[in-house]
Length: 164
Image (cartoon, rainbow, N blue to C red; front, side, top):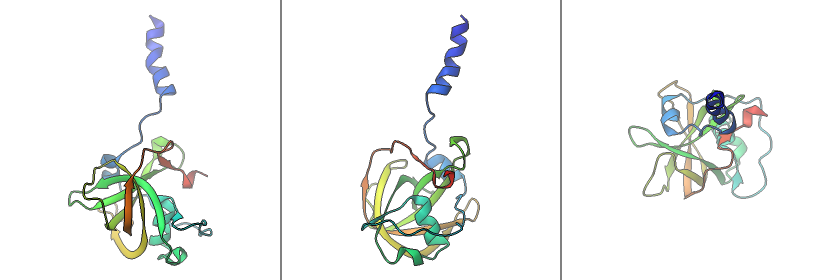
């Protein structure tokens, strides 16, 4: 009988909880923070960037470090009440318990059907357009999409940029 009490505890330890999704992302203000600086862009066209890296370069660096190059960013989709699409990644400071959303608003060539929580790989270009998060007035940069394709949920769905 005692082992029956241990099973729920083992389940919590051994089974990772699902990543937070669009419901949480839209009810929590963006956690975007101004970085101390920017490293060089990775090689390749399009440039592979995390949501946090693109968002901080676009919002605080005014796109200067992006040098007009196409970028590729992966995240899950969130749609606000007005239908505005956001590409989101939950960023970690320490662990999943403190995950907070970083959001990129999307404009341009979007798929005809947008499903919240679907994972997308988006290719596009920096645009100077910037919105304010209605939850906490934080900066939400835009990305002008040239292509988007569905992708499977990544092995690690969190952005650990700040956790390194």
